[in-house]
Image (tube, rainbow, N blue to C red; front, top):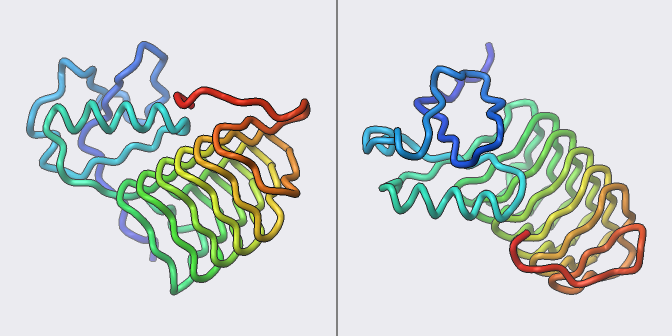
Amino acid sequence: MPPPRTAIHAIVQNTSHPSWAQHPNLVRTLDQVDSSVFEHELIVPLFRPANRRQALQQAMQLGARRLGSIIDPTSTLPSRLAVGDGTFINAGCTIGACSEIGRFAFINRGCSLGHHLSLGEFASIGPGVVIAGQVVIGSGAFIGAGAVVLPKITVGENAIISAGVVVRQDVAPGVMLGAKKPERVSDDT
């Protein structure tokens, strides 16, 4: 028997970008949101950490107080896992034992996350990322699609790891690691 589905009551479009909502009849702009929307749990499944932070701040200003998470039932989770409010775990992920997922973290489809992972709040993990055991990923860090993080690595707060990169050593806070040499990035990632 399939697991119960989460009912969607409204989808708030807070940018001018096109909406890809599966239920276009539920899409509301910020000025169309009324207090009844916030009788339900708030979920913020936006990929970029800065977008999630902005959407959460807007929702809290409009009256949101109940926070929820989405964990796709096709993901494999250990019995010892701590998941913070507002977390989104997409389809087909595998998460190792004794891991901690921070508030409003976003884990995209098909990721393999090792044991004793510490994933900071508002961190984003791209599709197909492989993270080995005992890795620490700081708040607001962004790891691009298909990247690999080797064991016992620390990725600093607001660091950006480009798609496909193999991370072999610690990454300092606010650094962008890609095909070119590492560089500092702004805090609005």
